[in-house]
Length: 304
Image (cartoon, rainbow, N blue to C red; front, side, top):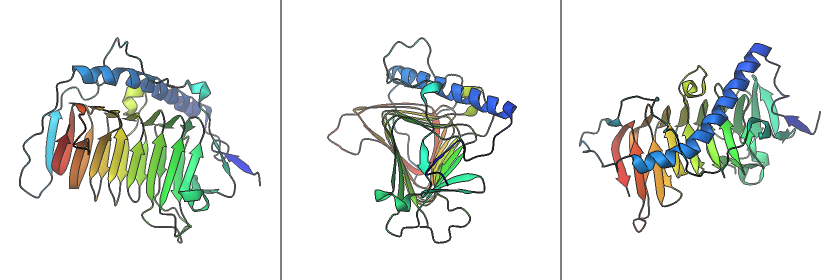
């Protein structure tokens, strides 16, 4: 068995037609990433400062809508000249190799056992492109979190998934494994990112991108924590799908003194908890800008 296995080479070849569609969708995802990184900070400067809606006293989850018109058509502004971090071209995105003692194929998905990694952290130098279904597990009772940490961006295209849901054949795996994604440039999702436990994401730009925005067809993108909180720390957030915590809270915090959120066509759902947006440090002065979105929760807290 080879000492390293490519994420691409582990899977059967797709038909040429399907591969072309996948490649085109990838190029669209990267192009939109470039636009997102340029457009959202400018959009945020033009958007009105958000004010907290009246919070009902009933215990049933309430739905708060900041704006519901033109769900995706006005998600990005045009003729943007602001500077932004560089997003790599498709040719520069690499598919990392995985040591054979860490990985296995289960029902067509790549399974990485982070229980064999120090602190459960899988490091990638450069950009990470997930080409299929990626599942993290831990068979080490001392490792309760899986972390994917990259020095570039994380790209999860249409039809791809990243999860910590236990696959077949891992009855000894840690249940409710937490998932953390850390990227120095951005996290761009057009598929699904699901954690069996809590889900945390940290990057200057986080984008939950609907396939139609990149010229592809498919279900709306999902970022979800099944049993814990979903926490994001970012400066720029685009949500055209669903960001949800099934049993906990949704927390969106700032990386810098500015936080811009464009959620036209998107939903934040914490029906069994609360949604917290903004700084957790009351001494900070945060420039919080929000545009659009539906917020389903017991309470919506905006702090700036």
